[in-house]
Image (cartoon, rainbow, N blue to C red):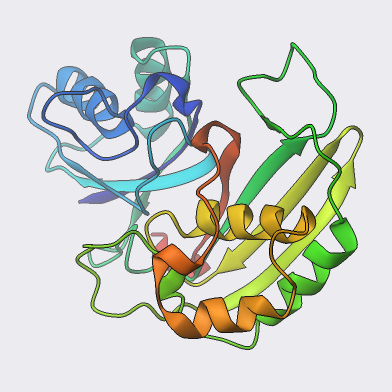
Length: 247
């Protein structure tokens, strides 16, 4: 039987989602909890993998087991077992072929930039002292919709077969003293969102012209794009599936 887990986590203490040989990951602590509670080795497959320090307000993973479980009871026990920075919101049975990664229709991310020094969000948002031209940054968002190949924003030496992504949403907006960037696509490349934000920040600072983004994307060269902003201000906020995966 296959089960999906919906969860969230504060990634500050973790070396990303995926298991690492020498550092703790979110995947590792969940697998340890499930294996302990179900008294059998359990491996999970996530909807994607977030980098070191990146957070998720919504993430999904799946696991297989021959044990008939009480989903609500297992969720309660797992939340009690897990550290305070990982929370399980739902466990539900799905079709045997349902896959947390390959069946995801889209994913959405939020990046938070604080424009005012705030001691209470130093671990939650990226502080930029300089004034940003948000109008130019918003114009740059529209350029992203003209393209599919985003190799220029991808980490080099990745094992992907294609750099194509279908971007469905990209925009900047203010929320109190913060500037937020939201982006939604069918898939994302490694480091893609942080590289896009870094490039947009350079546009907002006047270091890159808005129209230069066309040249950057066409170059397919990571060194042509902007810097990678810190991971601590990035949040995976949504993973969408068809409703028919549930049993």
